[in-house]
Image 1 (cartoon, helix red, strand yellow):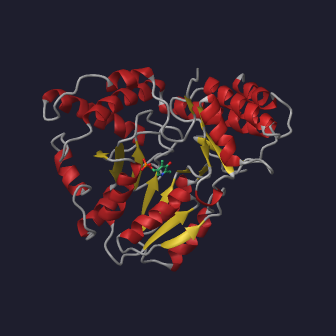
Image 2 (cartoon, rainbow, N blue to C red):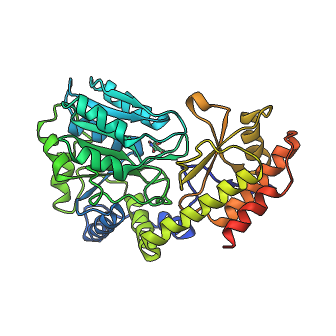
Length: 378
Ligand SMILES: *Cc1c(COP(=O)(O)O)cnc(C)c1O
């Protein structure tokens, strides 16, 4: 027998309440029943986004909402800036280039955050920049960027701040309105505890002005069309009805717990995970800006990282993520977001210890679990 445990930074495990909602018979979307759900979802999404702006629901994975941000704000030849500190920062660059926008790329070393002062200097040098693209939690490196500071820096200019919070939202605090985030993008399969399939995007009045002049080609992801429909509590095309109904349940669960409690819970799980890794003498990939949604640790010298992740998954049913891009084979990434609980973390660490020991890594057996438990018992 093999039991499966998902500890990856997307998709994340589904609570039974969500599985139940997903198993209900389908209803039609142009009905008062579905409209009532859409209305409730819209109101609750604003609370989770911490904004007074509408949040549009797209039928796509998170990247679709990222693409919507690029094509609704910009035109061919426009100036934009991308803060790139990992695989998902790179995605902003690739998206821009696909539409003939050549961004100024500001690189943060993988595993490190970006000093907001560096961003301020770039914006001073290049006053024509219309949009700054950034990431809340860079899932490929386990780093959280200082979006509050980015908001202060960008807010003092004519540029707008776009944040990919696909893995961060619902795990790490981000106050869209208060921090001056102009466009906030997320997806369903991480902090929201849902299957993949929904892209969510909210646009501030400052950013909305750019949609009036944007000439990038667009059809399915045209936010002006989405906005017009949304004014009638509707969507332009068939929404992912089942996922929206499940999102309604997820939002109710999240708001019943309260955002502050959710962030505290994620922080504690992250602290426990980081302590466990230190207990195992593993080096955290990010020493100072470690994310509360996912922890990345370096695979120790002499251990085959890909084999480690594969053995945990195929032999013991514990799925963690490996490294991506330039860190392929060099990292283990453990998620602690959404429905992942403290005992899931203990279980994951236990499996990691077991496989590390078998692969010949020398450490005090049980030290990771002990360190995590000490944090969790506080
Ligand atoms: C998962 C993730 C994405 C990609 O989302 P998809 O749903 O796979 O399209 C983008 N950015 C970040 C930070 C992510 O964690």
